[in-house]
Amino acid sequence: MPEPHIHALHGFIGSGKTTFARRLERELPGMRFTSDEWMVALYGQDPPEGLFPVYHSRVMELMETQWVRALELGVPVILDHGFWTRASRDALRARAAGLGVPLTFHVLTVPDEEALRRVRSRNEGVGALHIADETYWLFRGRFEAMGEDEVGGVVGRLS
Image (cartoon, rainbow, N blue to C red; front, side, top):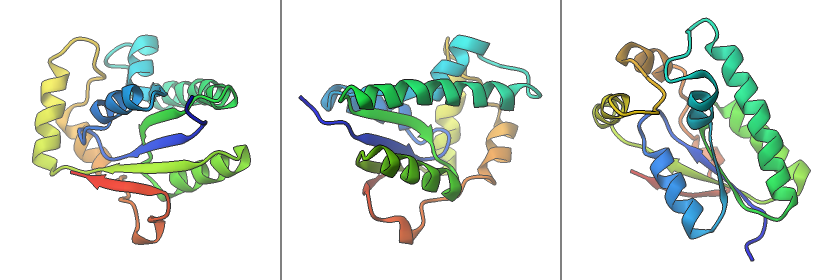
């Protein structure tokens, strides 16, 4: 039986995090927590911009209670969230240390043109969290790539 372990996916919108998370979920096996799927299930494909931060915070809190419980039960977890900021990665490192559970970051990168192509294609499907081009570029400025000093616990950079 697998041991408890946190696998955190670091990458921007459209980098392939969910595709990779689904594969990892089967291979480990483990339990996958994809924040976009929870957002859509609870608030629809295109939640109001003004309420998005509140909804997202609720989803993240709810997911954390579930993934922590999964770890307590000995199940590896895959956190398909992105961890866009150094602060969010540091907070996860501290949380993992507090739980006494190993943490591995999987870094996914693709050029913006490919990411936007994927996002536009995904937007046409049913059940996807809608991301407009303007939103993509607005959020792009908030993304902090994994720093060279963060290499410990990184499995690899998948492009």
